Amino acid sequence: MSRTRRTDEGHGKVGSVLSGIAVALGCVLFLGGFVWGAFVYQPYTVPTGSMTPTIGAGDRVLAQRIDGSVVKRGDVVVFQEKTWGDLPMVKRVVGIGGDKIACCTDGKLTVNGKKIDEPYLPAGKSVSLTGIKATTVPKGRLFLLGDERSGSLDSSVHLGDSENGSVERGAVQARVDAVAWPLNGMLAKPTGFEELPGGTSQPGPLKWMVYAVVAGAVLVLGGAAYGPIAKATRRSRTRAAEPVRA
Image (cartoon, rainbow, N blue to C red; front, side, top):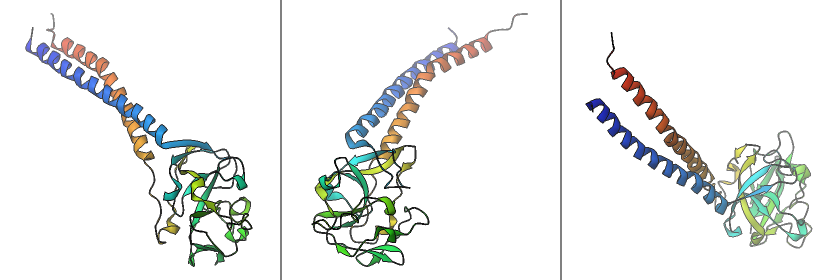
C-alpha cells in the first residue's frame, strides 16, 4: 500500500469521527433549541388589530411564559381578564402600580409627569384619541393600552371600572418577544420608558434558541455531507496518482 493511500485512509478515519461528532452535536443543538423553546415560549394568534402596526390582526406571536410580578413598563403582554372578555388579549403595559397616567401633553402620553416617546404608534395619528383622563394605577396592577389607540378596547375604555381600568399582575400569562408570522422578528425595545424607575425588560432567550437551531442544522448538514465529499476527493487523488500508460 502506498504512503499516499495510507495517509488518505488515515485522514478519512479522522474525518469520519469528526463528521459523526458534528452530526451528533448538531442534533443536540437542533432538537434542544426546539425543546427549550417549547418550554419557555407559547404561540398566540392575535385576534384584533388593536396593536397595529406593531402586531396585526391574525399575526402569530411568540410569548415568553413569565410571572406577572416581573412585568415592566413597555412590555407587550398576553393576559386574560374576565371583565375584558373570554379570550387572551395582547396589549402594551404603559403604567404599573403607583404610576400617574395622563393624556396628553404636546400630544404625548405622560407617566408620572414624563412625556413618553412612543415610535411604535401608527404614523400620523394622535394619541389624544384615547381620551385618557388623569388616573393613578392601583398597587399590584397594570395600565394597558393598544398601540392602535383609536380602536383599542383597553384601559382607557375601562376607566369607569372600580380599579381605574387596570388589570392585576396575576392576569398576565406571557410577554411577547417576537412576531413569528409574518416573519417580522423581534419587537423593538420601548425606549420611551427607559428613564423611569425600574427601566424596561430585557428580551427573553428567543434569539439564542434560534441560533442553536440554525447552528444545529448547519452541523448536521455539514457532517452528513462530509462522507460523499471525502469519497469523491479520494477518488480524484487516486486517479491523479495512477501512472500514465503510453
